[in-house]
Length: 253
Image (cartoon, rainbow, N blue to C red; front, side, top):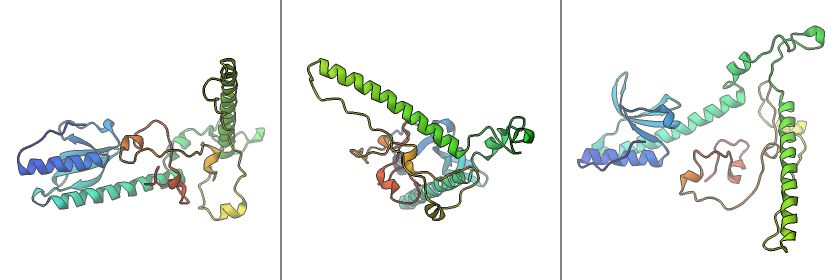
């Protein structure tokens, strides 16, 4: 991200304010002479040349233009309003990506390229039907995830037993190590429950969050510090985000 240096003229001061607003909103601000789309998903480029002329700011998400901001520096409030509109457009874009993910559109080409005609269901004589792929079925994938979770739990359990033994040998000094929680095995959705959900594309299956992830509570990270919520390497959602039928945002403020 470019370093935002203090400017002197009213126009430059206004631009600095818009830069700061963009940064606070999660955008990476760049100059049009040094564009790096790999820096982040959301890039705001200053004075970008478009088909209809230069724009004061052009917002990109995954290298695609999602909004243009014509910052009338004599009317800074309008520029800020345009920024807010762009943020709303970004939310719509995220929801559209999620919708395409549920419909299987994001992986359609990959799934097509990974068809295994030679060893799949094309071998009708071998008891297989045409059209099989090397991909796991939802049931197979879920079973594999549950097996891996159980194996991880058993590993943590053995580590806990060793830690308890060491704690006892040291005269039980300090707090006793906490026993790891066993992953819950929940019942599958009933037919009546599935009927209340949206119809999924072929190859998808409705499951519960607890089937593939650990659900827990604790102290909520400071909401004022976006580094706790953005660009981390551990996928998670807040409990508030689970209040709706679908998780459309990773956290609910």
